[in-house]
Length: 613
Image (tube, rainbow, N blue to C red; front, side):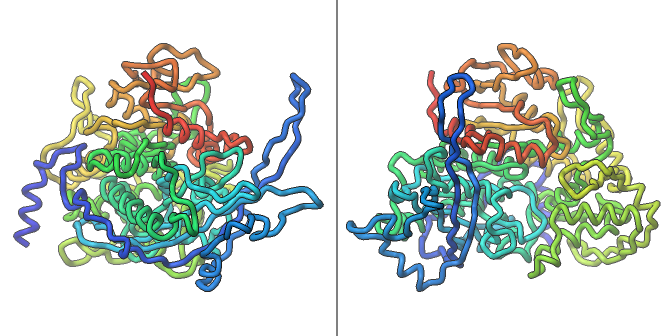
């Protein structure tokens, strides 16, 4: 107990917004023998030629129509060993794989091997933990030889609440082969064809709490910890690839000028930026050939993010359209228990607090915590995706709920929470619409924070002086208390302060996003004014020399703006989507996918380029 008391006394002196050297930053030498392969699968990509006529010139041209991942199958050990020699000088791709034809017409084909592996990392206490990751290895391209990965994609997955959605579950039949998921879209980077170059070695870790650690708590938005674990997955994955795969026998080694890029959307967007920060602050950019990050609609500033839920009444910063958001509501209610549980489970500032100090008994009676923890159940049917959670909220708002349980206290004992609530009482928490939103069936549940949070928690968040002084400057508490500790814990995960990126950052963010609001991007611009920004030109408004219309309306003004993306440190695309969070994510990964020019891929290629003076 003395040790815990000392921790509580010492915590007020921790710096906010910076990551001090700790057990999380002490990186041991990688021993490739610590990598354990769990399974290997093979995926096939498919595409076809399509003839189009240019309406201006009248000339015919051939486009490659992407049909995604068409099959996925496990490879047993005997089959893998048989394929290990790959080919001799006298054999060709056609000899190995047969002629892929369709009514006499060649069909373009390529694929990848998926390796799931275990690797060592650390948990929130700095103790060793074994985690899991997925590695996609480019395989072959018909009549074009074998694929040497040009670069490494550090793929960071989005928020999930079920284990069947995690990367290493991709090849177990639950979500395998669905390329229109976050995992599937990032695996498309392993594809080797004429339109999507360069192809990549893709390393996509399960975050702690998923994969083989589904029985553990997920440290949601604990940015430094997740970044450390993702970086470990990359270091061990690269070591295994270089020692066992990319040796020139089975697969070609990485190209000599390879670079790595972290990329993700939603939670993955913030993890991509956190990985960027961790790599730079721990001197790993040279070893990992790091080029920078691509970040889509990520929660980079948790305090500004939550304050948006309290204060915003549908602002979009362009004056042409209002969102469905209302002040005091949250568009995806499960976000609140995810954030609060993640802080309580992992952040050092929060270890002495319990989640019922923040969430009301009525909201806890929805079973939100149990739905989050159901990820450890072995069967997909017994787990809850974010869609499943929302559907449960809608049902409860129509039928009521009875759920009472005990919640363990951090330092012993239990608290009784929950209870029996009528449909009318549950309707006070949620309201829903029959207009499709977030692509969840025909309903979407919006949560009212005054009912979801405890009165003291809600009052703290709605008191402006807790967050701003009389001059409008942002403030952070120095004292202790259950809300002050939460405030500080959230601020300690603010990725927009405490460092200045040395490598390129590309942002994609919809100003219509009500789940991960535009204020997250604005915070980065406000707190990093001395970088050179390129703002993708807008079609509806004339941009100034220093900012886009949307950013300027939000009070975010880059001091230095350039007219050419080649000269920029930061590239901002805030114009390609007018959809909410899920729709914007589809636009990020799929807009223009037929031509290989989707925003994620265009930004990825920009990061790989060297900045010019």
